[in-house]
Length: 189
Image 1 (tube, rainbow, N blue to C red):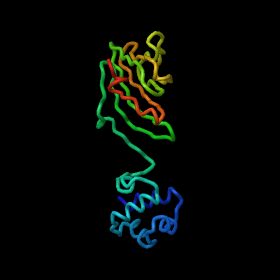
Image 2: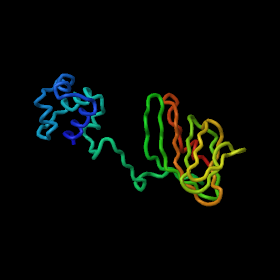
Image 3: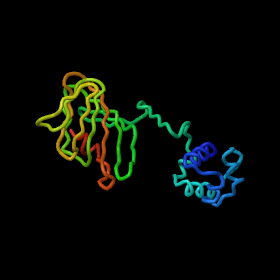
Image 4: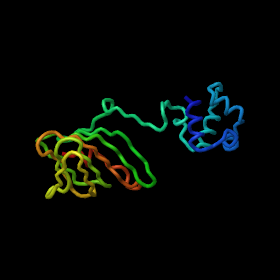
């Protein structure tokens, strides 16, 4: 795994073997062997490469078929449930000073999900069904393909209009506020 990851990471950064050798204090010949899969790196070598490429060690050692593709199968993800909503976190993205969490969200009919509010902004895209979402006194009604964004720090609800709803929930919040606690805030009955 190191061989493939090392070559891809080096090329993504536009580094020659000579430049990576200079930055990591590892001989160019050793790097060439590592990229070809012939070398047997030491812990010090892996940490030097990690520092030179500015990636966690796990990025060098973890198998990824294509480093530009992230595939998540929802069947293997833990479901966070409440009386009305099932959430599966598909991905967390740390972008500059903002964190985004992408969820597959299913809303069951006949129940209302109420949140008193939490840090950040909620973005919702309905993919199937009709959904009421937003301020409890005046929620927005969304159908397939509709999108709404609102401050999550105010009370808000989720409820279906008639049948079940499938949607994508994107939670956005500043890094300094920390992630919302879905169990306590978003999923509270």
